[in-house]
Image (cartoon, rainbow, N blue to C red):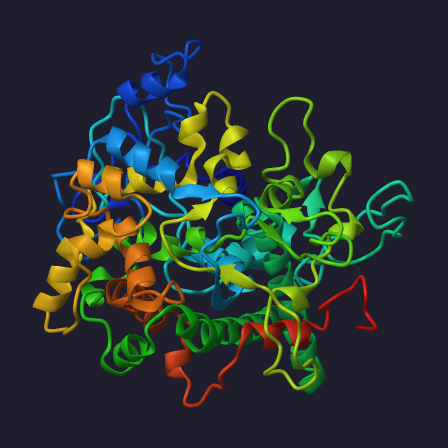
Length: 539
């Protein structure tokens, strides 16, 4: 693995700051001394450095930047108001008081996370006491081009550790055997169903894809899909060899991936008329002047919709399910190399050297295969509805715990999302809705009364957040109000459609450059790999 990629290997969520085009390096804190002191408790140390910062110097000339689609807002809610709101959002435990399931199969929650890691990874670090951030000064280690650099890294020459000796096939890891004293009983090792590892650390293009098991198994599916496509190409043309063979396989995989996004993923989460209009007419806000930049309104708000889709627990396989041992969201973090260790003496995988065989996913429980004739109908579960209620497990994420020194209330993902929006000086949801209307797009925005008519009325009204709503909160409330939580509303749909269509149009490999590329779905990809339920292959 190259020195460049080795440097990236250490990057993790929450530890970076950003370069925003036209503004410079973002210098704002994610949270202030005052907030840290307030929530640190009697043993807290408000004078120590921000645990999210590493004090390193930013690059002089960032290659990949963030940018704004709309004007920044200097009028931001207080940290304390956002803290109250964030902690109130995470309130559901194992479905108790659940708002119900959406129409979206549960696997798309983590396909969305996989896609997110392919388009953005902020690089620079924040320090306590710094001024606010300018998106134009925030860099990303991912290209916003839907090109799977999170899988391919810098290619066989730049990231050789990701590849087999032929420089074409991607490495696959093996699972660890389980004993008769473990859940599910003895299962011999030798399943090719783990990420490749050095020790417990995954050797992959983006280490964040090993921070929970669901996205890790999704990443593994793409590794296997690449290898299957490479084999098919070689079978069709035995003369293919070397870099020509690899590039042909990468192109086919990337086109299939973009087809999944356009024809399967986005139609499930967006208003289809907005998506179709954007494909036909092109982006209005994410135009060519924004080429190669990642919009902060998408990265820090609209495409964080998946956080509200997380279930507190999952039907995972024949061993871990509601009838035996629930596959809780916390366990999906424990059985990953990136988040399974929370400190000294706490090893990932509960002491196993790699993923145990009894944790291999059954994809039939996460996706709808009714459109795949070779598989047919399956008993899949669904993602939670999009709304401002979220799983309680998100209030204490292991990946933030493992950083050490973070007060418990600041481990909350909802709180961090809201504080990140403040850090970027994002416009309110109302401001973005007005700007979209001003550009000639007709729709009816949600009202302050509708926003307040939900689970957090008191906090919203006490802090005027129903009138000046943080963009992320506005977008997930809009989804609930407009579509009962089954897809994004007009503001969220417009932002995501603009970005994804524009990013694919500008990708070096682009499905829009193909005359006729067939529609493809994530269930089709999984069926092509042919590894839907390894623990019960006869089903």
